Length: 344
Length: 129
Image (cartoon, rainbow over all chains, first blue to last red; front, side):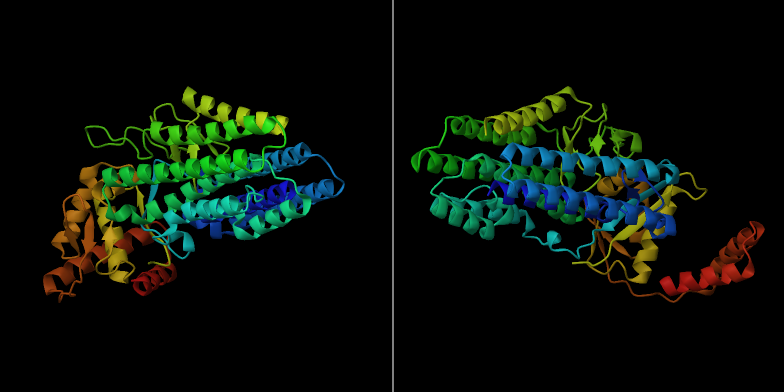
């Protein structure tokens, strides 16, 4: 089941990296401010085409390798390393393309673009979309609680993977450890936050910033609590039936709980995703300069008090790496993941 | 729900005052029907933050459009597009527009834009609105 989860994660990461540049604002391409018409020029199309082709080939290559490794019976940690390498390659491809777009940068001080109405051709814009992440988590809970053999791919892949996991568990008699469940909950929460951001953006024109901040925070908190709730139930189920197969499982349970708590604290500690405004009515910090976005992906702005800011390269949020606490937050997540993988 | 985005572009280093650019840009969308009656525009604060300009600049643009009958301004709730009846342009206004158009065409020709290109641009502008 770990193989299915990791290969699915590889495909999702690949798809996200292929499509993200096409879904972001028209005046931003790979984190570089451009003339909105640039995308429709031959050069713009060529850059996008090459990037998409490159990432697609990378994803196919790493996924095929992971599938091959699983067939030959490689241990799970090898698959995790392949997943990490695939992610690193996608980031590298993005950063490389970011350099290719730099010559086409336009002065930011001159052109400004604002969206008066958000496009809403996708399902992500549906008013009920904030609930989608929570529903995903609940589906995961239902399958996990009713069939404890199921595991963490559920919040992400929903019922099909859960049924497959259940089948595996029944046929092998081995109960899967909660690690992948924790990852699933984590990824589910991340997805939920993405959905929420889309929905919040759609509503942004009809609410005041104060209302919007409140809704965003409340929504994030609900998602986090749902994640905690599901993982808590899963932990109960794990401890109750059947007992974990090895002592490392308890450590993993604790780490999963720590990760989710960490996410909840991050959302509460964040100074809000809104740009703070001074008494003169001018924004205190500007997130638009390209210099604030390293490789077009990572945000770093010492003047911005916010810890979590809407990502520029796609849906979801990113940390403000100019603040030391962000490095600490990232280190906690990475350390927890490493411990889980090592103890797996 | 809307199928396309409605972007507002301004050039902060241009000769035209920013509040005029915002008002003109919004009016172009309103005339073209890309912004329809009962649509809600971003609040003054939101739009100013997104464009990186002072709130008063956006507020002034909204006031101009409200005076023209395009918008209904509500405190802290943004601006709502109104169903506006197209007025009959009087001769004075017509003359003003003609004058501005002549000046614009002259400025374009002075910068080397050919007559054919000016015609094309005018056609695009008329079709777009």
